[in-house]
Length: 280
Length: 247
Image (cartoon, rainbow over the protein chains, first blue to last red):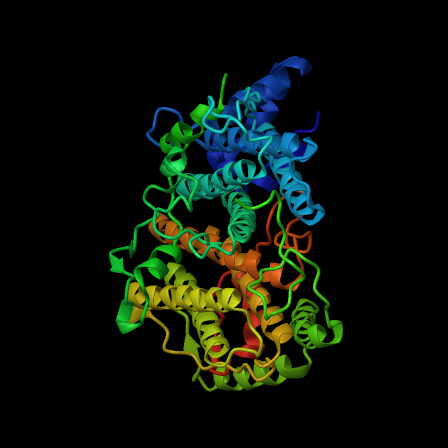
């Protein structure tokens, strides 16, 4: 086992790995000491323990990086399985171009699952297991895999929820440049997905102007009360104490002001939103 | 209600249409716009300059030497000014698009472009107020390479600016030390991504997150401030001092 290689790999993900270790100046000495004292088979475990300590972040009020990544992984499992089932259900998405779009989304969500799993492992964490899902949410969306409109509505909700979830965790990743950047890179992909699905839904509703690629106020865009929590707070038009509506005399309507900024949600709020979709 | 999976009839600009249909594309017309940007970007990557980029950069260098370039500030301020610069560029661009729409634009797309313009103005003014006395001044831009009467030219530049904006915010996040600023940037970048997704669909159906912007890990593009300013330099007339920007 080559400690240098392991640290080099982790450093690619987290350049501050040395800083996180207890003995920051003598990280390599620490590894050498462990290597000398432990049987070879025990080394990965010892390393895992060291990194857990470095990354766990438990005890404080902020979740650690691995906690955030496992939270994200849970959401990506949800999305990946949703699209895996949806794109494989014959008769659900019948237009080949729309199918192409959803296959793109499906592939991204599966890539996110793989990427987050690998990242969590590289940080010495344990990826959470894939939950068992109920995409009808206990019957609220009973025809989710037989009615395309329902499928698209749930899809939009998942994507908009995903955007808010990653946004809400950015601050908790500020200590790791590499993980923060990767999370931002996933975040904008979810927003691209959301925009596509929202446009699709608008077209299917005869170009309904109330369903835009961006989020207007806290509107569910016709999906209804079952998903209201996903849009709660999106009506905010004040950013860092600056009112955006009609800012500096420009004709910026309240709709514009709310659309121009997407709002975050806390981990707790997100987990409450996805809870009806998670059986165990 | 609607029939299942209804897809709009073949897209023409006379119809209220976003585009989930392959439209006829004039690749040559598109290339004029796309190639200009790509060439500049490529040139910058190779550290060789030609075309507009070269003239502008050298003029900029002269102003820099004379100490007459606009300073971006340092630290978080520099990053916020950098975002302010990009939002100025986008807002100015869309204001020009909206003031003289290419002919035959559908009502649906007209509404989208007007909303995008409003979002970019909102972003621009937000940064101006947030930066207050530390803000860079209003910057002058050169969009002479854009043919605003051409749908293909407008769509190509629009989507490129939005994709560039997404890559810029994704790459700049790690340089922000204040979590409030990071969150504000996060609130904006996903809206830029929504714009990019929509505009890319005008160019080619279902290209909203194609593999030129999303990699094998499902990750969007992230570029450093120094990489981005080289890409947008051909559009900036005001001499700028980017030397304090990270990346």
